[in-house]
Amino acid sequence: MRRYRPLRRITIAFLVLAVLTLILTTVQAVLMWRSYDEVKRFVYGLLSDDELDRAVASIAGSGPLLNLMWMTFAGAGAVFLVWLWKARENTELLTPSVGVTYQGGQRLGSGRHRLNTGWVIGGWVTPIVQFWYPLQLVEDVVQASEPTDDPGRIKTLLYTWWACWTAFWVIIVGGGSLAFLSVVVWIVRVVDRAEAASESGDYLDLYDLQSFMVGLALTVNIAFTIATVLLAAAGAAVVLLMFRTNAWQDARMSRPSDQPPPGPPQYAPRPEFPSYAQRSPWQR
Image (cartoon, rainbow, N blue to C red):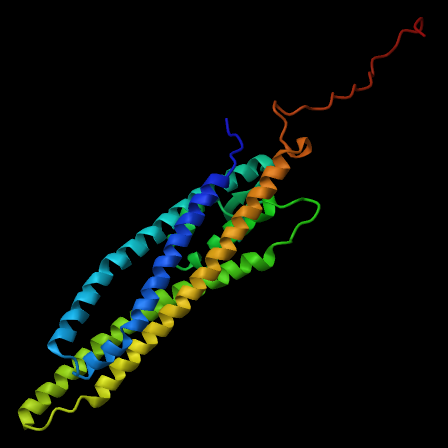
């Protein structure tokens, strides 16, 4: 039998992992800016052998930090999915499902939820719909949890979280892919110029390509810093959202009027139907 589950511990676990992720991300951003001058000197071929060795060691040392950052990030994501799943189950107790919702002929969910329970996980990884299904999932849980006498008080926080979260992934995925493609194009152009200079015996001029690579490094640093700020804003918004939702659910479950009946539904007695049997003339 399904029962109500307080979500405070899960929310605290998410908060700890989110803070660790943000700390590691901030440290990574600081290291990227501190190494920017060395990156420029490396691109222009101005590093000594000792400086080159230190730069290689610094790059190799950043690998474990990035791995740890993504591990805590994945852990926070998994804990959030657990919270969302259980918070949705709690809303089924607060507001029992009364029917099936249809949209465009497609079965989406029941009661106050637009999507079926499986989308709590699938909505985040399914292409295209991942841009709005997770928002609908969280929005439905929040709306089903908030006080029935004063709904709609948390829209700004909800949409702030989703805007920052979406922008973060656009920068990380879109910007990262663009940066990788730019590096590949840069290498191809360097090789082409080197071959052309070798065949003609001319001087190999790479200054414009070197400037392009320095500009790309600066762009990557700026983009990663912006992504870190967006991640911090999204994390703060979703933590506040989770704690607020938890408080709403706990408060509603503490009121007997909001708790579902413990037994089977009670039905009103069926009214008696009038009798059409013919009375005896001796009956009064």
